[in-house]
Image 1 (cartoon, rainbow, N blue to C red):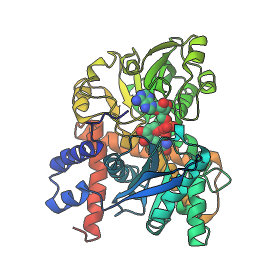
Image 2 (cartoon, protein in one colour; image 1 turned 135 degrees about the horizontal axis):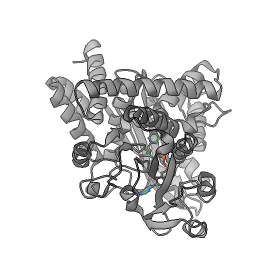
Image 3 (cartoon, rainbow, N blue to C red; image 1 turned 45 degrees about the vertical axis):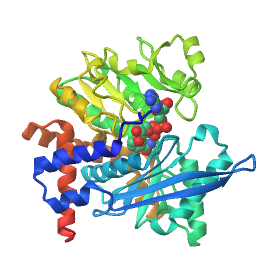
Length: 428
Ligand code: NAD
């Protein structure tokens, strides 16, 4: 989990500052883009199942909407803070710009732990969150989506509340809805699959064949699971997966040298992406300390859990064979760790690019919802592949041309697009 001293917003600002310096960005654009345009912080009172009322804290931040309505997830997490949400909102602005979809960057959340909440209590939190924000959300304003510990069910409760308040149907209000209730085919797997599309392109660039590679993954939730599934389908071997253990309040790394069996491991995973340790031991998985996921002798590392996982403290533990890091999580690598990774010439597919499949497919879902006409799964995933591959190619081209670290090239494309849109609209 994020440590208390780690501030994701400071990290996002420092990443932006580095690129702003490189681009020699003017002062007004810097100030505009360094901070969110709008922020909401509010309370959500919920009558709990035991009859008591508990007050939860809710957030929504719009970092920048110059290129289109805000777009970004809602996270339920016990350690949620406004600064995590600010960072995530800023990263969404860059992500939508680099993947080139006409949306801005926002994010939201509630400080809560769904592990300890009944479904009814979670429904009340969802409805309370929408009630506080109904005037500031909508298909043409700001469009939420799922993230850590929020699911299609949460999105549907939120949609229902929004439509009850507005008295009209608004299927484009929120994305990540259940298929058949305004959701898009392919949305569930979009982040993990999108990540593997970019990884496939990186392997081509490095002259490696997927079937000759091994990988280690951190996180076995929505993103990690689908990434593992597609990577195995294209021939890659995943030898370890780490995840959080709620009971022991720590993380473990589950390892099988011969390659993990996705279905077997999925079968003993709860809805929060936690693996049953005792059952895993029974299935002959070696159980290692959680942080060992990055010390494995593999070609590919996929951080797909939370932010602040590859840091100055542990970056030297990265296995000597590692050639590619593909970031499924948002902000898993700190700028200090980035320096060492760049020096080691490990090929980085940064979060803004690697996990942009969620934002892209959310955009597809919004388009379909607004038309009230839905595409087949293959069409959605085909369009996703085109978007991810095109974005990867533009970033790679710039990185090669200017001899840049892939994260810097990704940021450069995004910041230039957003700053230019601010100028074109006459904001600065
Ligand atoms: P999830 O809640 O479905 O799964 C999270 C996984 O990470 C679980 O397996 C959990 O056990 C594990 N985990 C949590 N803390 C850990 C720790 N300290 N060490 C090891 N494992 C830990 O979440 P998700 O939707 O898969 O999201 C994962 C990451 O991907 C987040 O950073 C999220 O912001 C990012 N992301 C998600 C989406 C999306 O649409 N779901 C889109 C883009 C990016």
